[in-house]
Image (tube, rainbow, N blue to C red; front, top):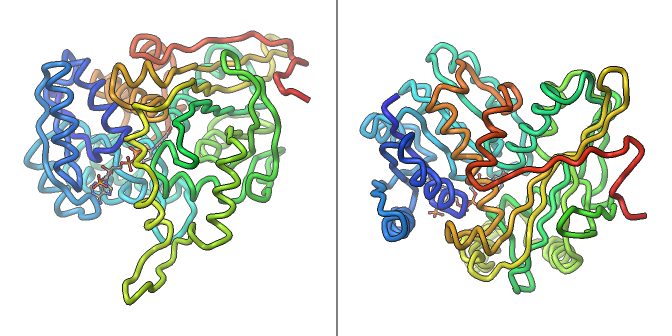
Length: 405
Ligand code: NDP
């Protein structure tokens, strides 16, 4: 490895990951940032140059085009491509990596723009091609998926003999002061939240109506928050990879105002993903909505409060019942000070850099397509503590719950 990383996409997550790569120049000797709008790459590169005095090269690329990507990768010759564009670009970027025999890392499951559904199938199917090219494809190196998978792997490898139940709990208690805005790409966020919920129990997937299952969870250092059951992509790989699992669920917090706005927008058709004609122009309602909403990257300066994302894991250790809560708490304003981005981008961009760092250092090494829990969790957990996302573990009484009844 020569220490070159090519980062694709120039949104909030990319801003954090690029800034963090620039804080680890002993590993990342050359950083190239490319996206559809080169001006956004230049803006991030200039901010980093002003604050950290590190030069970032920039380029324009349409990541829907395998040819354009291949030409750029052949020119830059990176060791690793870090995909921080949208989930729609996963397959084209993976194909360009296969063609050029370059390691691939992303933070989000492939989605087709016309189908509001995500699954690993099409990415896992590239395993053979990745093996043949002798490269690693590391899927989902964000926070959730990403760190949540690593927390589960750490528990499986170090804390339990058998894991029976996992609840992933994602709380964003940040306040940006707008009546309605999303903390990451609005199209991806609203498609995820307005979809049916799903969890896995005793070998079966159980479907629930959108945001129909609610509990109040008392998040350490944040407090009690309404939390709703959602389907989330790490459930698919964890069900496959954590042996002996009996149940896994995912909950995310939403305020009442967010849900009321979302319901209204859905009821009037603004979350639609199919084209409609308006005054002779074809538009996709959810994409038009994205144009109207605040850019998530602009929320950083105004967001106050904390996030708490973690996993409550229970099972057996040496024949005795055990339950642990592993989580990270992140402060929006601290994140902004360090990277000019809010905590949702920060908690995704830092693990994206860490996954890339471990592959660059050869600490995580394999040929084929893998999820985060396939690797030794320890080096990743160590890096979280060093790179700005320290974690804590609470040893719980096996009958205890932080659910507020
Ligand atoms: P943004 O929408 O802020 O940024 C996406 C970037 O990708 C934009 O710069 C955009 O370009 C660029 N892009 C889009 N299409 C193309 C294309 N065809 N070619 C080149 N560049 C393109 O998103 P975020 O930064 O919020 O999110 C980035 C990724 O992180 C997403 O995949 C998201 O799902 C994922 N994510 C993962 C999380 C996790 O915990 N695992 C949590 C949060 C997000 P332009 O500027 O021109 O629009």
